[in-house]
Image (tube, rainbow, N blue to C red; front, top):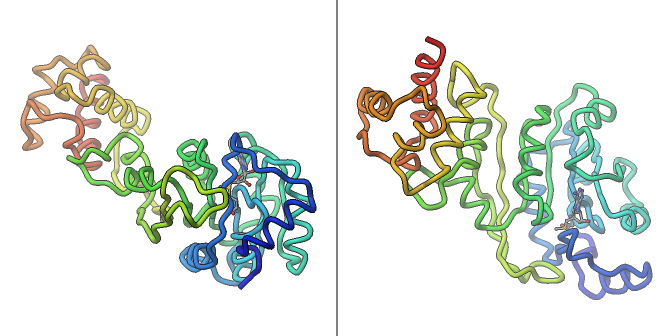
Length: 288
Ligand code: SAM
């Protein structure tokens, strides 16, 4: 176990480097040893696996990743941290840093340049202010076997929710289209320094070989999903008709009854698969 979770060591390290936490960069560092260990153990890593880590901070999670993986490349935005990481990660020669913004760098290129064709996973204790765009960027990079990230508990619940619940939304559908997610650990706010206002959870998303639903037009599918959740209180027929004027409310109602659903149903009651079926029916109307 590394000393990177000892409060006394962290404070001394940061003081020596003149480092103050940046709230704007979502800097809540882990200080509970079981958390980085459990994340690394659940991140689908073996000695042949390379890892992209987002936001290494002072290296608390990086340390556990490096002891299990072939190679770890960490993308860190804060220019002050590489100096600290040089010290804390000195014992590992399979660790390197790309200084940059995970939302702006070309993740796929970083993977190709550093790891070639081998198995690669992504892992992170994500900064809260970019949780959903960072997950989208990692999924869209299209080069990971799995993505294991710590996020606000509320976001983890949204990702793993089922239809007909308040947590279920467009982001749930997006993640469940490309991955099979599951919550692997609940992490209370007290496991961080400084402690954030909310609790967290670790979600592992295994990337599917094929999307979970086969649709005729992926772009249209996501337009339908966006429309279905745009106004949650409205019936789905109204939401679809507003987004796709060529599909009248009656036509949409008929599509739903053909699918064995009520014509007055709301979007949030449809599973990912049913949203896929509906988008294929809309495709037929739009494309004649
Ligand atoms: N991994 C460390 C840990 O678990 O203790 C730190 C996690 S802290 C929640 C988030 C980290 O992400 C910080 O090091 C922060 O500087 C970094 N960060 C913030 N915004 C970023 C961005 N856009 N791209 C890359 N890293 C970012």
